[in-house]
Image 1 (cartoon, rainbow over the protein chains, first blue to last red):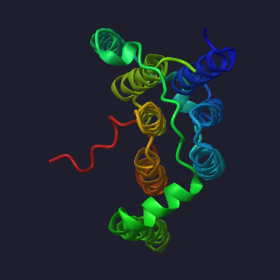
Image 2: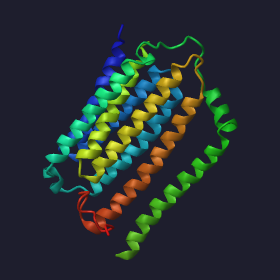
Image 3: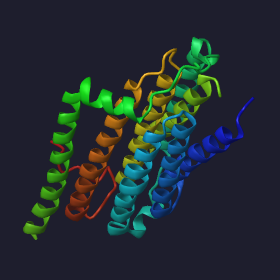
Image 4: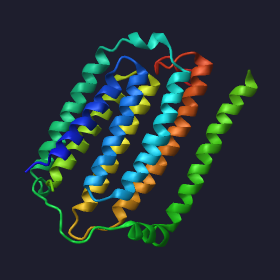
Length: 165
Length: 102
């Protein structure tokens, strides 16, 4: 039996991501992207990962979408409304349809078509925290450095631009 | 619950939409949207496959924590670059940003 919650979530997520790329106004596209990211958080809840759902809402829906909407407002121009797209659109559609058909065919003939979840206990917050600080302590440190360098890099870019003018 | 294929198919659809956007769009911000969609398709796959293991482990979720943090860093740096490029070139069409071309 197909769960209706799953059906609604998938239609919402896929539809919102199509609108994000195809809407005429870029601001609506950014808001639609936020809806799509929210749908992914819903899938995480369905998959018994509430911690990731919280993180997804916090980081993507809360921070990244607001950042994107802010930038869209800053660089908004009327010119974008009529960017021609003929040849590239056909090529993109062709590649994505081939991708869906090929990978979908392979997956349908593999074991995942009928795989059902095991009834063993699912990992909790505690397991994630222990894994993060025992097995994955080095990637965690590097991740901190990457985040710091990304923030410093973004600030430097903005500041260099200000000094130039 | 659903069979694993349903989650995989949603993730595949999102990935294909992202690839379509990367190929066909010329607006830099739309390219960033497409990259975000692709990253989310990947994280959805990570969580789904780790949930459907015979013994669900926390490793898949830890990978998604890393992926979400990296995506946030990517968005911050990418948006800063877009802003600078827009101020320098007065345009966000990817075909007009050819200052670095040899």
